[in-house]
Length: 372
Image (cartoon, rainbow, N blue to C red; front, side):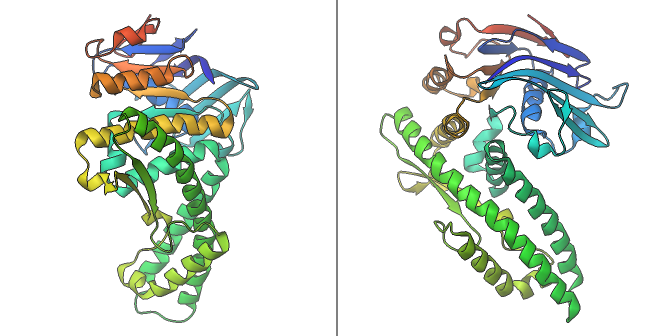
């Protein structure tokens, strides 16, 4: 997979930008707040139709955009041919096109371009909140299994509706509670699809992450991943069993949920744990161990996507190389060189292993403009 060119119109601090003839390794240099991360974000948004930095699409549109909208356009070379991808962002919503044909659903567009983003905040995947880890799982699974996004979207809609009903049920009986059972069924039906896909994804990711982590640590550490569900057994994947367990748990916690006015069971409450040599990395791991685990996870993503779709994703390294020591930098660079198209941002070449980055295409960003 290879991004041949990219164009931006009124995206963040960019007016009109067109980058042609992109290389295998693209090094984007510039001081902070000039637009480096905005360019990386645009590639991510084109792949995922949403930002990794904000949930508010309005923030992606330049304040003075004449049409009140932003566009991201790129030509992507895939193993089965070239694709022209277009994404328009406006206050009314998003529109996506593949080779000029508008897609009925955004989930049909996701997967046209596959990316792996590694930024300093990704260290929070290991040491941060469960919400960060759930978002990581949702983003990555959605890229390779678009059907997952449908169930996730439906689950989130039901979750909101069910939550609204729970807030109204305190002190009530009868038909109102019967309505809750309808929402329970819908929540569980979509929820078990999400849980099953997450467990399968983690099992595959484990294989790659364990091997990569062992190599980075010269065999000194063993990394294990574990899904932590809000109900049932970690290893259970049978949908019928998961559905029964989900419905049982909902019935057991119903009175408590009504008192609190929120849904307490389901994939929106699940987590992912990391263990290094049998000890929980979030609790007992040093900062260096947590960084290595996060790096192993990102490198594992690259290989897993290749395994799933038959080609490598594009790698986005946003201001992260300088965060790694020389050894980890070398491990990362040697992984992507010659097989993964890579975009790297940095404030300068200081602290970078420039010997390993020879031949990279250099771009200098200043106040929303790019010089070659």
